Length: 131
Image (cartoon, rainbow, N blue to C red; front, side, top):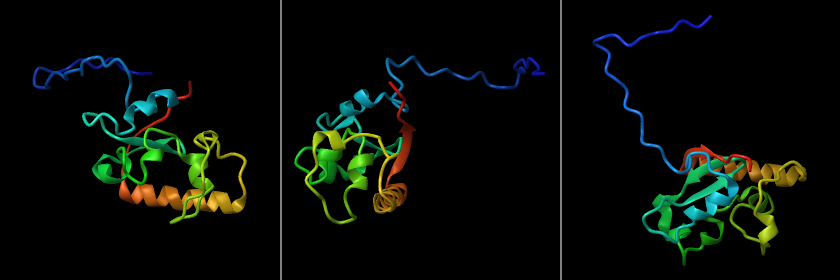
């Protein structure tokens, strides 16, 4: 049974953050596009296997004009599983989705290599919520 714990006189009162119109640490996939690098005041995010990575410190790559900009503000799970490290195939808009259930062993391995790379190079800032 949980006990109701009241704050002691010496314990500081916790300040609650002001309400935010959206939970940016767990946005819906459609909200991820807001973080595509076009607005220099916002961070640049991409999603990979449900995790959201902040790639802002590499604006040179992910902002408009950068060689990785097509991935900014998108779920890149399926797209990354279809490409090998260091090479990029021609991707279609339908390749940008979170589906990683149906893929070959080679695609799964490629995806896991990308996940390991992003885990090492970028900070995870949240997870994608289902719409």
